[in-house]
Length: 319
Image 1: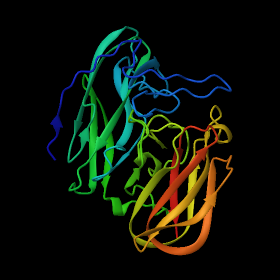
Image 2 (image 1 turned 180 degrees about the vertical axis):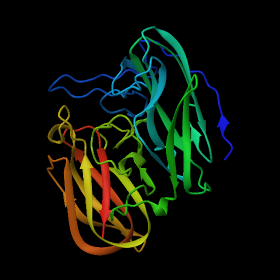
Image 3 (image 1 turned 120 degrees about the vertical axis):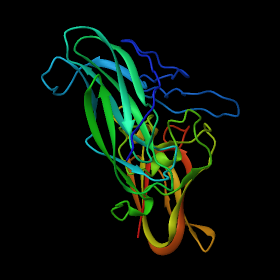
């Protein structure tokens, strides 16, 4: 297919400033500070997201040549056609300066097919031996034809091609998880954009990407209950819902995770409670119940161990 090239300069220097609200990070034992303060008690969660562009010492293997080369952190990217725009496919791309001189380099992104990249060009100063990395987001429209496409990263003739698979939502291998990448909504969401509802059905149940799109955080501090809903692709007989809440070494579930909630399902157009969790201190809770045919699930949050926000990393539903 015919390639298209877009140009959009993004300047970066060795010390990169992050625009946007300042996050108050917590010391050990302290309550984590909010990322955003807005009216009506709409506040944000903990941890400042990673800078959009960062420069640091080069890592990994180069090609042994004294050149500036493009780099990517994956060998293949999967993009869901018509996926939730709040959770696009993401890949870390950039340039590695393998020369002994400080340089100023440009990297262009060429793509074929229905792909839309968020960052079609990087232009940056690079010290000798350093690497620049930036997150590249990819989307494809609902009508996109599933198939194999590609991204081509080019730095002064040095090319790197990354294969891209565009898949339909119904063709995703879900391992039995009926909630995977299904439409998710919530009663509120923090305004920073780093904690979307779709981040809690993206298939990543680890807390590693917290504050970077992997997980949902409600937008109203100390206001309960909150709701998190997932609409399935139709009626299914459900008997188990797994919930992963925030659980890292710095922010363990016992201090910052979800503590109390009800698991509800929508059967015959009516919500009904099928399981209750109280006093939780774990990162994962699997709720099992008598099978019921339902077309949606809801997590009705009632309290957290920190007493402030609802934090959900992932919700999974099984027959």
